[in-house]
Image 1: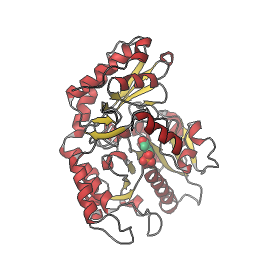
Image 2 (image 1 turned 30 degrees about the vertical axis):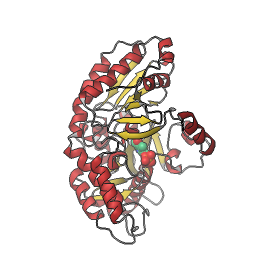
Image 3 (image 1 turned 90 degrees about the horizontal axis):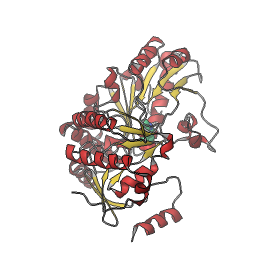
Length: 414
Ligand SMILES: *Cc1c(COP(=O)(O)O)cnc(C)c1O
């Protein structure tokens, strides 16, 4: 079957809740993917940072396959021999006392919300049902009804109400707004240390330190959603390390399984995690032995292959190079590590056409927020490969408009 036939099947039999590029991928290896026509592309999206370790990493695949032959699911009604060692490893690696595993990122965010609220009632002493969680405009924390209820993106909410109360949206990066919003009922501040879906928005220096200080002063929890920013993407294990702070709850997902399997978790110290008692919360698949084995291998790969350091070094170089680019379309280049947003001028006509032009040059990226091209390759990328990708980006950003639409040259690269 050809691309058009696969697209047609998806359109006819699948819900239309996405608008993907029309490239049908059938194989992936490292930073490369191949479509059903045999074209080869470099993946500059890495499944929104779920594939930080590269596609089909042999060591992670091996953990999935061997564990699958052994034991796949017991539910949490019984114990399994992979969960304890996974907890211990993740705790040691990140410095938090305890782990609570889930599957998708949104479930882990929900878990953090439940933890923060219960902590507020049982430890802080907030009166029943009065706990408030401060969140930020431009946030992306997932797609459950509770979470979209505090999105500032109209489309994410429209038609899905009524929503869960208890959230207040503040402007992202505004120091005073948070200071003014603090009161005794604030259970937590929930924030992405860098907003990914919001357009790779890096807050001003000192912002996270400011939130940490406010949380301490008012005895609220600082909850960081590191589902996309964490596990090496910004050149540190966690993005909050850039500000030298430590949150009360960290939410992880995506790269926690290297793209093989949905695994997410929250990390916290005992004072917070001990609010959960048997029956308070759970998930049939959460913490299953395959998830535990895969996540352990995915984390080992990040550490053993030096991917976090690679992200820091190559990312800094790439940002500098892109900032030097002379293009009439580029408004700003920002990011941290191998997580770069190229924001285009409104007159450029949207980022999608540039992403489509890049597709014709053998590079897959996805626009975010209409005007931002996101560059976020798997962290295993080598310098020469990244150089080649940047050349392609430079070419489309300096091309004449008519060249953009006709570009369909061969997609083969070494
Ligand atoms: C992707 C993402 C989520 C949601 O994760 P899912 O696995 O898609 O539910 C939440 N927060 C952030 C910051 C994300 O990037």
